[in-house]
Length: 158
Image (cartoon, rainbow, N blue to C red; front, side):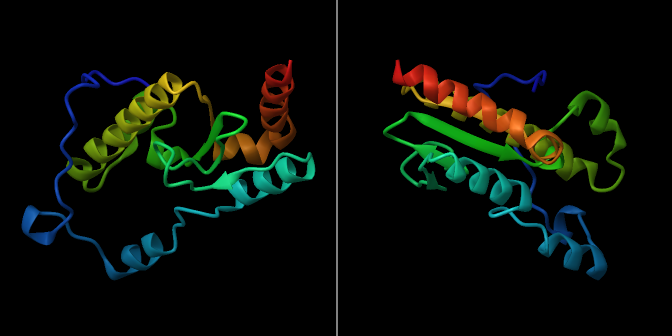
């Protein structure tokens, strides 16, 4: 996740209003309202797999920076399962593919990427191991992603 802007300078995202020149169709509005921010299918699949291995965790813990999808204060890990569009997967290529409302979406996604880096740094400073998986990684290779967390937990016990 790279961008040319400094992580110190907060990226400004314009408000998504008609007054600012942003408009949306009723159909797109309905579509966007159905996009989940929590409890997505990849998250649920990962949670079930992790739980079946005997690992206990909290979901969306408000006292942990970034409110990770899964976390454990005791075992010092935080897991984020990021959607490709929202968190800038392959951003250098995907940025050019955004055709409508670019003035909103480009800074919005770049700000999300910046926030992700800041949260990673905060958690790292607290001694918390951060795992970030793309939702498509979970769909494609759930066992591989799960094994990364299990390997960390087994090392942590030593």
